[in-house]
Amino acid sequence: MFKDPRKPKGLKRFGTLPNHPDVPVGPTPRKAVWKRNKATLWYYPSPVKNKRTPLFLVYSLVNQAFILDLGPGASMIEGFTQAGYDVYLLDFGIPGYEDKHLTLGDYIFDYIQTGVRRALRHSGAEEITVIGYCLGGTLALIYAAVANEPIKNLILFATPVDIGEVPYMDKWTNAIKRGDLKMDDFIDEYGVIPAQVMEFWLRLITAPVNVTPYLALLGRLNDKNYIRKWKQFDKWVKGHIPFVGAAFKELINELLIKNKLIKNKLELRGKKVSLKKIKANLLVVSTEADALIPEEMTKPLMSKVSSRDKTYKRVRGGHVSLAIKGGLPDFLTEWLQKRS
Image (cartoon, rainbow, N blue to C red; front, side, top):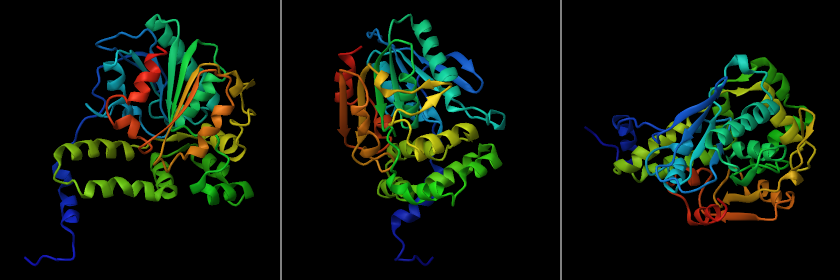
């Protein structure tokens, strides 16, 4: 058979990917301790528990939360439990059309705040550490600004806070501000934005970011261990979930267009979301190669809180590298151990 010499061998081997067995995600032992609607509060007990302060993890509304427990050796949750921490993960689940009315206030007060109270009751702990990743970090931050619960530590990874200027979305943002792109009408038409639309939209505005994993795979198609981890990650990348319309409207109009969070002008259920109210020990982490949430969207938070103990950390890696690298980085181990 004639072989085209112009076609790289690596590209030919892309066709063998389906022959590699699918791999499960979320292997760390857990049990459900509370449920509300589609959401579940998962409890991951540490097999070597030696820390008094449990961890409460909040993930994004855009993808499924298993990115925090991708697989053995590639799991943030596994890293925490092996380091002696009991972990609680709030998994928002997959919303349906009947959830189109859910607002940011519902997620903050009915899900996150109630979930933290359940975790405190279940653990018997006097204080808790709240950890948010990506948009889950934004939600965790908003919660911390209105919380009555004893939050000892607040840790935010790759979290958008100052969203007034988004480099790769300037044309979209300007079009919405001018009224050329009527997002409210679009959202009302759907009620709940389908997962396929969310995936298409995110891939459209972050196209170069989405090509990178495939380029990395190209040179390692003979590495079965790498392919296993790549397929786990790819399952998450393609696992977008629907986004409820009411909350999506608020994110666009209140946080993106008006940038109310960083300006301390956001209100939910009649309560002012003031970042000055936050006094918990604060750790904010951004990564050098995060093209999705650049540093200018994260760092401005540091001057807005009242925390006396606050640390901003810039580290190597991409948007989800901290979640899938496996184990805990030294800086996180040292910071958290001193405060737990």
